[in-house]
Amino acid sequence: MLNIPDSKNPRVVIIGGGFAGVSLAQKLKNKNFQVVLLDKHNYHNFQPLMYQVATGGLESGAIAYPLRKIVQDYKEAFFRMALVEKLDTDNKKIITDIGTIYYDYVVIATGSTNNYFGNTQIEKNSMVMKTIPEALNLRSLILENFELALQTNDLQLRKALMNFVIVGAGPTGVELAGALAEMKNAVFPKDYPDLDISQMEINLVQGSENILDAMSRKSSKAAEKFLKNLGVKIHLKTIVTNYDGNKVETKNSLVFETQALIWSAGVKGAPVSGIDRTLDRASRIKVNEFNQVEGFTDIFAIGDVAAMYGEKYQYGHPMMAQPAIQQGALLAENLERLEKKQSLKKFVYNDKGSMATIGRNKAVVDLPKLHFNGVFAWFVWMFVHLFSLIGFKNKSLVFWSWVYNYFVFDRESRVIIRPFRKNRINN
Image 1: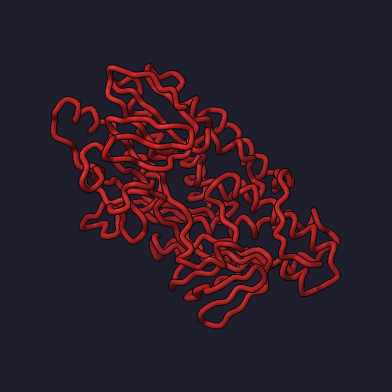
Image 2: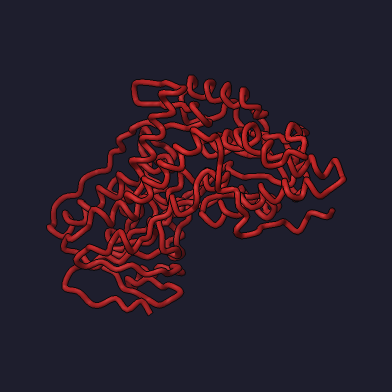
């Protein structure tokens, strides 16, 4: 049972504790609402640094923050760890795996999930890192592959174990490729002196003509140069068609023998059941300029799962943290305006820019009127990400980990805490 007490205040149920849901909950602090936050995990994770958990640069606790701690000082707020199964819009109730809850307003902030474009083989055999458990699985697989490479006399298998193919060259793919390249150059030679680390390959595969497609041409070219200098092999205009766990096939007949394909080639919305008629082709919920779900005045969607079309954003806003945070903040104000019978404010996205890091002293930054890269961009990237973390402890953990890694040139979190091994390896 959810065991949420009745209240004289209208009940706002927020489904999802990502950037959008947390932003809304924070802005509703001690307002005249009962706030109920639901999530299948009891923590908020800082998605932009997930790749550092996967490559041993950070421990998972450094990017996770308890959702209960976010709302613990609120006058009338509750958190429940629950998986939402269905939204019953006719009866204004939410059905979860631990019970049912009624709402006055419901906000869907369930974010996004990986998009495999219908390829079940790739979905079954590839690695992803949308969640902390997935990032830990990937970290274990990377390290286990090297342990297995030491144990086999099959040279072809050894090479496949040391070949990492990353599909998708957005910020996630680029940052992961850079981190793996730094491990190849500075960490693995010391950890595995009896392996020929020069045989390790990092292949970054991109379907379009440029990496970091959403960024400026200048930043894209700078990032490509940084990656190539680190030893990453970049394959542009290459579309992956299949991966059986051992071999990657592409449309242009390029083949990779690998025991580790990492998929970062696309995402789609992760909506809740019950509002299927409002979804677009990317499984995002169609909303108006106030983030109200089409056909409803009491149901809202914000963040990655929301598709708000406009002249500038014909396919909806970018599925990034800033649109989610800004939509959550405005919705809190609009909920108050609804209760006061006032007109709602339209959402206008304030694009603050985008950035990506490629490794030590290497990053690219696009601001609305300025594009730069290199060491200064790297410091800007670090400052922005530190500032965006929730909680002083998380900021401190990340900061000191980065300081240590910078001066020692090491990644201490190279431990296989939760073993993860694909059954496909026969040795």
